[in-house]
Image (cartoon, rainbow, N blue to C red; front, side, top):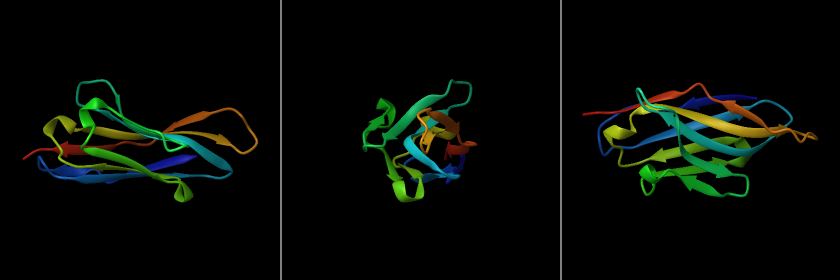
Length: 120
């Protein structure tokens, strides 16, 4: 399974960006997908996650501004980011938990990261 993330860039404070992350491969099913971020000089942190049953969690710092969604048919997760702040500047990574058909072991995969810079 491979993850391909896209949608990062430079945006002014108050602006919006939409990140996408598509999982590709064969004979697998996604259990959950999530977005993490790593600000400069800081540790990676969870931004938002969405489970197979549609359960969603957000970091307190992004509640009300970010929305995570998922297209199960395309194994793709999105992160709509509104009202962006300079503190949202980070490399954003998508994460997927999945298993292969007929197997019980759960794998974890990280995407390559996409830079989001919020600056005037």
